[in-house]
Length: 115
Image (cartoon, rainbow, N blue to C red; front, side, top):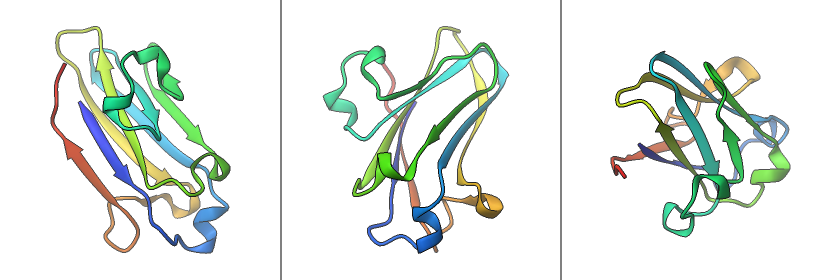
């Protein structure tokens, strides 16, 4: 599964001081999370993603404000060695756990491409 998370051009000040958390909680299977500021087409191998969490169970990425300052999008790939995986993905800034999908802040666009 591929997900493009669009970042605000002029985020609120508090957002510039917070880490972005991407959390993956599996219910079935062992999905892993990969993220980068480069587009999906620019990355040919999973090991080339900037941020990787391939833990056995819950996966979590912490991305600092410096790492995404000036970026327009974060491209997220969920991959699993299992035939089927069921999971929940949360993207938030820890200040009150504001979901990025709220229109007031950012949009999450999902691109259903499978490889």
